[in-house]
Length: 318
Image (tube, rainbow, N blue to C red; front, side, top):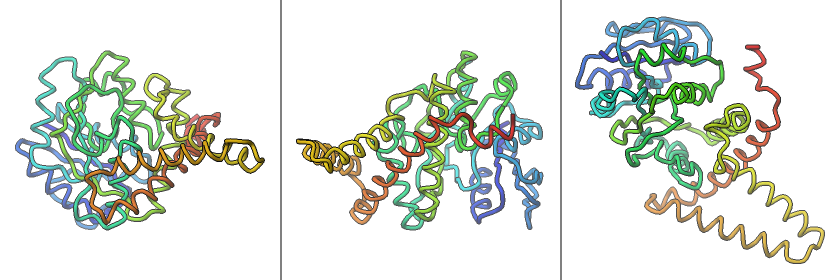
């Protein structure tokens, strides 16, 4: 049996479609929902426990305590598993050293306009680098880091590594996956294990999310260098610093600085446009502007995390 664990603060209107999609999978499942406060109309087919305000990591750990399945499937309330999601993922657990399986989280076609733009930005290899397969089906592979919005874990492995051990959010999944890898387990990416994942409905929320990602990845680059100290994570910050330096040199009249800045900016713009090939024409220009702003926000936030001695939530723990 598979235990599907769904942490949330409150129902945003996505929970029922999520549960319905889980119950339509081709095998027996139990669903465990962990809201902050009791839901108005809990589904009788669902195990529900109001946890109060706590981090998603703690909610997931509590969900595991309430569960009975040999496989633990972690998803978010604003996701909707697609037909065949579990069947595609579970095949890999027939291999003994596979400890976890993840799949792509695609943007629903009926999401609002700016949520669709956000989805297009995340799908771009200029934004997500070599990890764009998290947001659209890629190729079968092993990975070392994967988001917990679509992550299945063998119970015995979860218990062996001690579950989610921090209050980081986002980023608790990075530490968890690293603990699996250190124990010698493989994390398999299965492109057919698809869920739909609603993106942030406004630009403000999109940029806040990107800023949080950048802050935590910058901090993790020094705390968990095994999976977070990689060149692609540094590149937005390097581009921001290069742009600032070249702009200052150009203003000071340094010969060639303006030309170099113009050349690099043109190359960047061209690559960004190329990364949107195949995107709806109505989304390309908004996505271009949002992607540019996303790079700036992520780059600055990454630097903030890199120089931070400790993140706020970690200070609360310690």
